[in-house]
Image (tube, one colour):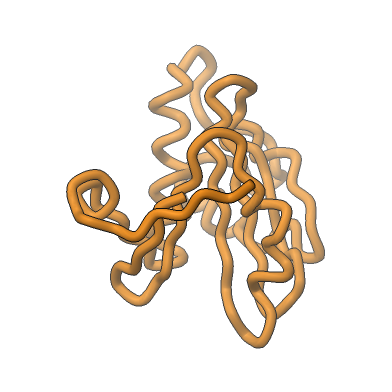
Length: 135
Protein backbone atom coordinates (compact mmCIF):
# COMPACT_ATOMS: atom_id res chain seq x y z
CA UNK A 1 0.00 0.00 0.00
CA UNK A 2 1.24 3.50 -0.82
CA UNK A 3 -0.09 6.43 1.20
CA UNK A 4 -0.11 10.18 0.79
CA UNK A 5 -2.24 13.32 0.83
CA UNK A 6 -3.62 15.64 -1.82
CA UNK A 7 -5.93 18.68 -1.55
CA UNK A 8 -7.22 17.89 1.93
CA UNK A 9 -7.72 14.15 1.41
CA UNK A 10 -5.45 11.37 2.63
CA UNK A 11 -5.21 8.40 0.32
CA UNK A 12 -4.04 4.82 0.29
CA UNK A 13 -3.49 2.90 -2.92
CA UNK A 14 -3.64 -0.82 -2.30
CA UNK A 15 -2.10 -3.34 -4.65
CA UNK A 16 -3.57 -6.79 -5.13
CA UNK A 17 -6.60 -7.69 -3.04
CA UNK A 18 -6.82 -4.88 -0.49
CA UNK A 19 -8.77 -4.82 2.76
CA UNK A 20 -9.40 -1.06 2.98
CA UNK A 21 -12.99 -1.37 1.79
CA UNK A 22 -13.76 -3.81 4.59
CA UNK A 23 -12.64 -1.24 7.17
CA UNK A 24 -14.43 1.79 5.71
CA UNK A 25 -16.79 2.29 8.67
CA UNK A 26 -13.93 1.98 11.15
CA UNK A 27 -11.78 4.41 9.16
CA UNK A 28 -14.60 6.97 9.03
CA UNK A 29 -15.14 7.31 12.80
CA UNK A 30 -15.18 10.66 14.60
CA UNK A 31 -16.49 12.79 11.73
CA UNK A 32 -14.11 11.48 9.07
CA UNK A 33 -15.30 10.93 5.49
CA UNK A 34 -13.96 7.82 3.75
CA UNK A 35 -14.34 6.83 0.11
CA UNK A 36 -13.35 3.50 -1.36
CA UNK A 37 -13.09 2.99 -5.09
CA UNK A 38 -12.30 -0.57 -6.08
CA UNK A 39 -11.59 -0.82 -9.83
CA UNK A 40 -12.32 -4.59 -9.72
CA UNK A 41 -10.47 -5.36 -12.97
CA UNK A 42 -10.88 -9.12 -12.53
CA UNK A 43 -14.54 -9.01 -11.54
CA UNK A 44 -16.33 -5.87 -12.79
CA UNK A 45 -18.02 -3.60 -12.06
CA UNK A 46 -15.81 -1.10 -10.26
CA UNK A 47 -17.34 -0.38 -6.85
CA UNK A 48 -17.85 2.96 -5.07
CA UNK A 49 -18.49 3.14 -1.31
CA UNK A 50 -18.81 6.10 1.04
CA UNK A 51 -18.83 6.23 4.83
CA UNK A 52 -18.94 9.19 7.20
CA UNK A 53 -18.73 9.41 10.98
CA UNK A 54 -18.75 5.63 11.48
CA UNK A 55 -21.74 4.97 9.20
CA UNK A 56 -21.79 3.16 5.85
CA UNK A 57 -23.88 5.64 3.85
CA UNK A 58 -23.95 4.56 0.22
CA UNK A 59 -22.44 2.20 -2.28
CA UNK A 60 -23.01 1.07 -5.86
CA UNK A 61 -21.31 -0.47 -8.83
CA UNK A 62 -20.06 1.91 -11.49
CA UNK A 63 -22.38 1.25 -14.48
CA UNK A 64 -24.81 -0.46 -12.09
CA UNK A 65 -26.01 2.70 -10.34
CA UNK A 66 -29.65 1.54 -10.39
CA UNK A 67 -28.76 -0.79 -7.50
CA UNK A 68 -27.64 1.31 -4.54
CA UNK A 69 -27.40 0.38 -0.87
CA UNK A 70 -26.28 1.70 2.52
CA UNK A 71 -28.00 3.82 5.18
CA UNK A 72 -28.59 6.57 2.58
CA UNK A 73 -28.59 4.70 -0.75
CA UNK A 74 -30.01 7.72 -2.61
CA UNK A 75 -27.41 10.16 -1.28
CA UNK A 76 -25.94 10.70 -4.76
CA UNK A 77 -29.19 10.25 -6.70
CA UNK A 78 -29.56 14.01 -7.46
CA UNK A 79 -26.01 14.06 -8.86
CA UNK A 80 -26.57 10.85 -10.84
CA UNK A 81 -29.68 12.42 -12.40
CA UNK A 82 -27.94 15.76 -13.09
CA UNK A 83 -25.03 13.92 -14.76
CA UNK A 84 -27.43 12.08 -17.04
CA UNK A 85 -26.55 8.68 -15.59
CA UNK A 86 -30.05 7.97 -14.23
CA UNK A 87 -33.56 9.28 -14.87
CA UNK A 88 -35.54 10.69 -11.90
CA UNK A 89 -37.36 7.33 -11.65
CA UNK A 90 -33.97 5.68 -11.00
CA UNK A 91 -33.67 3.94 -14.38
CA UNK A 92 -30.67 4.25 -16.69
CA UNK A 93 -30.48 7.44 -18.76
CA UNK A 94 -27.35 6.69 -20.80
CA UNK A 95 -27.87 5.62 -24.42
CA UNK A 96 -28.14 1.89 -25.14
CA UNK A 97 -24.95 0.57 -26.63
CA UNK A 98 -22.77 3.31 -25.15
CA UNK A 99 -19.29 1.92 -24.39
CA UNK A 100 -18.89 1.16 -20.69
CA UNK A 101 -15.78 3.33 -20.32
CA UNK A 102 -17.70 6.36 -21.62
CA UNK A 103 -20.60 5.53 -19.31
CA UNK A 104 -18.27 5.09 -16.33
CA UNK A 105 -16.65 8.50 -16.87
CA UNK A 106 -19.93 10.29 -16.08
CA UNK A 107 -20.25 8.58 -12.71
CA UNK A 108 -16.58 8.94 -11.81
CA UNK A 109 -16.69 12.66 -12.71
CA UNK A 110 -19.69 13.30 -10.48
CA UNK A 111 -18.05 11.45 -7.57
CA UNK A 112 -14.91 13.52 -8.07
CA UNK A 113 -16.92 16.76 -8.15
CA UNK A 114 -19.29 15.90 -5.27
CA UNK A 115 -16.48 15.06 -2.85
CA UNK A 116 -13.77 17.38 -4.20
CA UNK A 117 -11.47 14.47 -5.00
CA UNK A 118 -8.24 15.18 -6.78
CA UNK A 119 -5.59 12.53 -7.19
CA UNK A 120 -3.25 13.39 -10.04
CA UNK A 121 -1.37 10.42 -11.45
CA UNK A 122 2.00 11.97 -10.61
CA UNK A 123 1.06 12.08 -6.90
CA UNK A 124 0.72 8.29 -6.87
CA UNK A 125 3.05 7.07 -9.62
CA UNK A 126 5.94 9.55 -9.74
CA UNK A 127 6.08 11.03 -6.24
CA UNK A 128 8.12 9.35 -3.57
CA UNK A 129 5.60 7.96 -1.05
CA UNK A 130 5.78 5.82 2.06
CA UNK A 131 4.88 2.20 1.33
CA UNK A 132 3.64 -0.48 3.72
CA UNK A 133 3.36 -4.22 3.43
CA UNK A 134 0.28 -5.62 5.15
CA UNK A 135 0.00 -9.32 5.89
